[in-house]
Image (cartoon, rainbow, N blue to C red; front, side):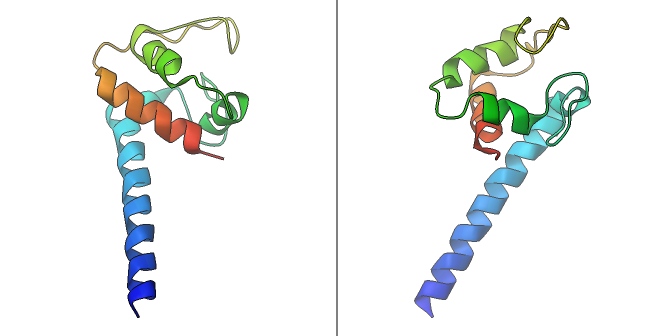
Amino acid sequence: MNRILFSLLAMLSFCNGAMANSSLAQQKNCMTCHNLEKKVVGPAYKDVASKYAGQDVNVKLAAKVINGGAGVWGPLAMPPNPQVSKSEAETLVKWVLSLK
């Protein structure tokens, strides 16, 4: 019984974290240009996760979220997002890189 309860609690905490990060992406307007599965203006989040799989790029990508960037995914630049704090950017990057 304890095993089942522990498993359910673990699943709920994972789902809540995933939902919270998805909500943060919505709140910070990331989903205006990005989608989980398909390219919109910017790349699909799953494509970003695949491209950077196994690489230590969290700090680099968090800086790009805040400062913007260009050239990696084509000619369109990602605009700066000064409304996103460093902590929020790190949370968003961790979430995106966890997608498979």
